[in-house]
Length: 113
Image 1 (cartoon, rainbow, N blue to C red):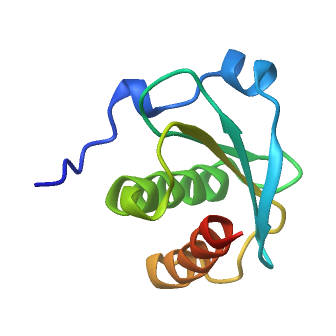
Image 2 (image 1 turned 45 degrees about the vertical axis):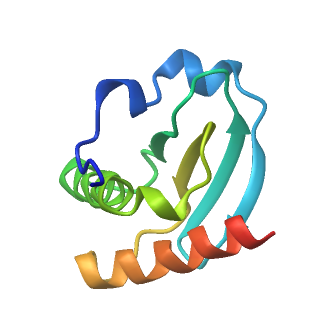
């Protein structure tokens, strides 16, 4: 049985973003996926949204949707790696369907390359 929680150990912290050697793994219209190896025995995930995207409510909503996608679809990501999603442009429709469709495409591209 798969665990659906997003545990504290699976979240990237500010120091993790700075110390990792990031490699771009994929790109879609609104998102960039970066990956780096880690010494932990788990997948870890983080989100970066620039303040250039106006509106804290919109930024927080997209971050929540991205973390929720990772929480429900951990099997799409390879193990023992850090993943960071950067929001380059805000999607016009910040809905679960639109975001999950684009992230699923991004994750499958990253794993296949």
